[in-house]
Length: 445
Image 1: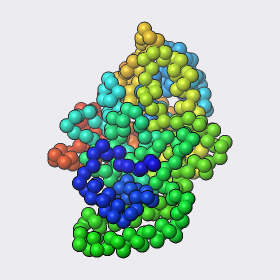
Image 2: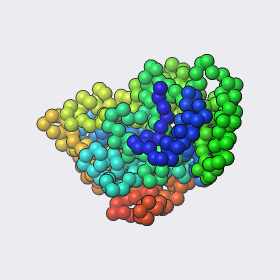
Image 3: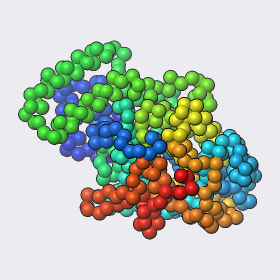
Image 4: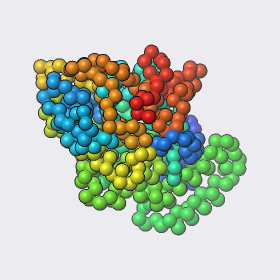
């Protein structure tokens, strides 16, 4: 049975106390560990910010795509550049569908970051901070979840799908010292035939009426305990339990995770692979009220093309990117979601301008490219520039902190804010080069 968890590798005394308390009410059969996962609802509440964007989907291209073979075509690529539907903008021939939708995207070709290996680079891309074994930093999704909360009983932040391998990356996308209230909901691979978020499904032999009776039973059984142990913690626990019941019994929440509600035509349009189905589920989640979804269908360092770079990009990697992201754009526009949802497609770094002896490209954080759109951003443009080999930034050097600040500004969040760590050290939620505060990319507003 899959259990929704906060992604924690350890349990605190409070965790065990809550679980023991729920066991006392005999609710584990009905998946009341949801209360544990939904603690984030208690502190966040409903959205209170004034930005045009209400949600964000990060399509994470794990492993790092080659910028010259995708969004920043150059002569040192084996693939020719093709025109897009925006005059003067070209992309790789590997992205023909996105080329027809370039008016809905902006390309930043001057990204520069830190980390020559995957763990360092993923940590930096997820948090905007250099990896520090003595300090964990909250991810972009956790900050958005904290600042905006969710709507309609949905989890504010989700990762689809959860990492089955390379789980240290999953740690980098967590909430760190903000606490488990803001950790992501970890969802199984929606492309699997038996995909189900078990805790959102009542056993077929149990009716809603029976569940409501069990709820009443819980209140009777635990009344004495609650009276004796009344505290702020248990008052909050009441709300956690209530939220878990709401998710369990709210058809709209269960429906958001139910891909059978989608036509086979739609599912095939996205692609029946993990990339396409994670994007489809991400759309359903933000439509239902989730604020941030990391669509992580590219797992296992998929784009890490140290060997056979060209074959990997051509045959395996760009087809699901081109198909899935293009379908997401069309689908969200048709549903009126595009103007209020930021969509970002990025990896943790780019690839070297040279081809190595194994016909691959190696890690290159110095200069790389990403695509983003929606959320009221100004699209149909290229921001920044690289040199003739996509090796160095020659115009408008842009940091992860600048990207974060852009997302925050679009969502009505103060990008200059700082959070205080448990050791009394303030950290920036949009951390740029040399510990400066990131600045929103002005061209996008």
